[in-house]
Amino acid sequence: MKEVTVEELKQKIENKEDFQLVDVRETFEYETSNLEGENIPLGGVLIEADKIATDKPVVVMCRSGKRSAAAIMQLEQLGLTNLYNLKGGILAWQEAFDPNMPVY
Image (tube, rainbow, N blue to C red):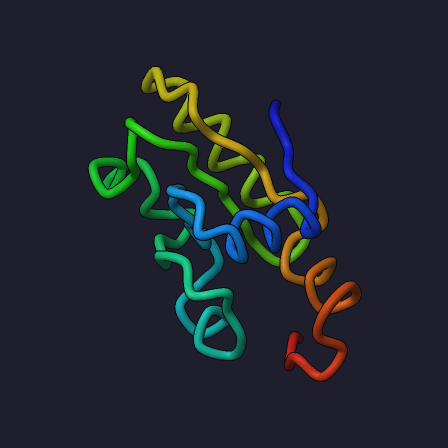
């Protein structure tokens, strides 16, 4: 499974690269703190797979990297090959860049 670090993600955002960020946490978690990605909770990721880009890189994130890895495994079964797991999830982002970000 391909991964990106929070540092690489921050670089993509700052460089205004063309990619999609998908957050597979539950809606209440997303509302607590997010990086402005599209919220598609893990339970609905296959149902809402049509919302996931196939023509550009897609970074999938969650709290720690485990649910996003599960989402990627499900989506790869559909033939998607442009998926990257955010290593360490939003907890790694908080630790690296935003210690005041509320996470649970």
